[in-house]
Amino acid sequence: MKRYGAGWDCDRGYRRDGQACVAIAIPENAYLDSFGERWKCERGFRQANDSCAPLEVPPQGYVGRSGNDWECNRGYRKVAASCVEVEVPSHGYLDPSGRDFECARGFKRESRSCVAFSVPANAHLGYSGNGWSCNPGYRQQAGACIEDERTQEESG
Image 1: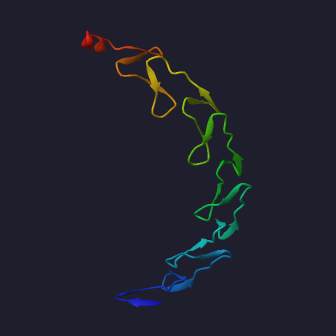
Image 2: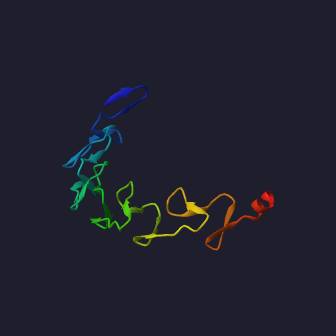
Image 3: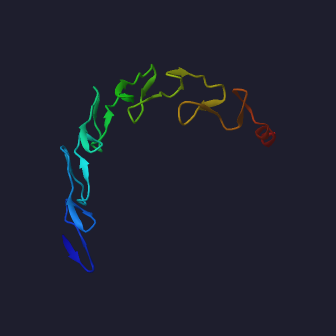
């Protein structure tokens, strides 16, 4: 028991219960938190009521950063309690997270595939690579780039 000022506090590993300090019951595969006031499950285990149950990590999975949950390897994504391979279509590649795909420049995503698109006359591939923009002096109309009237008036 720690005494200070007009009050008191329990030592690490004990909790206050009225006017007494009671030992904290620490289950198997657990440890006291940094404050010493409650317990946490060790890495690879998760809290299940008053105990720590082992994580069930599926094939192509690993124990995550928190230590109390699992993640899928790159190229796989979580689906229910398993890791399912990300199907990367032709002209696609894994996105930075590794849990989905993106399409290469000049292709756009349609459902689970990458479809080529055409760039009309007087247009160029957009910065993102999955769309197009009209060249300067042209504007978009009905899927084409037509000369902008304002540009014609300025030059004429």
